Amino acid sequence: MHQTITLPNGVRLLTERIPGARTAALGIFVGAGSRHEKAEESGAAHFIEHMTFKGTRTRTAQQLAMEMDAIGGQVNAYTTKESTCFYARCLDRHLDRAADILCDMFFASRFAEEDVVTERGVILEEIDMYEDTPEDLCAERLATAVYRGSSLARPILGRRSTLEKMTGEWLRDFRENHYGSRAVVVALAGSFTRESVRALKQRFSALPDRPAPVCRPAGYTPAFTVRRKAIEQNHLTLSFPALDWNHPRRYQLQLLVNILGGGMSSRLFQEVREKRGLCYTTYAYNADHADVGMLGIYTALGRETEARALDTIRAVVCDLADHGPAAEELDRTREQCKANLLMGLESVQARMSHLGRSELLLGRVDSPDEILAGYDAVTREQVHELAQELFRFDRLSLSAVGRVAAAEEYREMLG
Image (cartoon, rainbow, N blue to C red; front, side, top):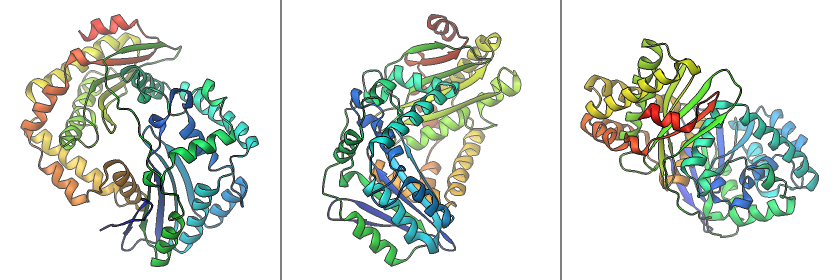
């Protein structure tokens, strides 16, 4: 059972002891991601994540790395469209030192101009890496197309044109304006002492009381987009508008996605790969946000099998919408989702992440038992009804990367 402490400045500190654990995981979650940026600020949240590792007022970047390695710990960070997270994991006896390092990075990063120049080059290389990863490029272009006109359409990494204008002082000001205390959640899971919790309370009480950043709502607009690229396979991602992450039918959606393309027994894997041999990889996924979501279907294949694969995918989707899942199929995928949840939460880091992300994004933390009950409450009729609502081909979108056809040809293939 976790405990929640809300500090006077609005920072929320969540802790959960895990019996038998000999490690601890600490995360600092901030409700400031790429969707909180203006167009001319694109990439700022991710740039700040990088700069946090470039040294503080008392430690160089090398010292940060060496001190964490000296205790056998791990420190890392990531940026999403909705948030930024900085986290560390270590043996319980080294928690106070790891927390000091992580908090030093969070509170006292230097943002030195020479480091900004160096790290900008690293990020530009990261952008090129994603450009050379067709699966990621396909998904990014899909989001750009269906969320056009909103901040969700912009890439997390930013663009060269916006990154080149960012200075250390500018990044520091952006951070000051977006890292309000009421946007911060601190999560600690594993083995820890009361003294460690008191130290975190004291440290984060120093944050000025400021509101969380806000962003404009986004909407889904169907779109087809193609990008020609000289690669061996064509990468295709189809999508339908779906549910936001706090929707009361979210458990129905997760089971629907799993039935469609969540594993080796899923309909897409069995029909497109196993029975027809049209591809090596195919799966379905749910990409949800605070106010909008999409259900995606991905595959990678040769140009010669593309039309047959798309025809098969369409048939699989239509059959699921027309007839719904079989009772045995729903039971199987329900157990799969429940097992994935419980096995995942055996990790100390996963427990910390569940605490932090849930509190930050949902404003609450559902217990494992509550989540299991959510899955158990889903009926075959509910999944069937949701499939009928979501799988409307007049709202279908597609992103294609590779030696691809024109967008209109894909519209014709999918009817």
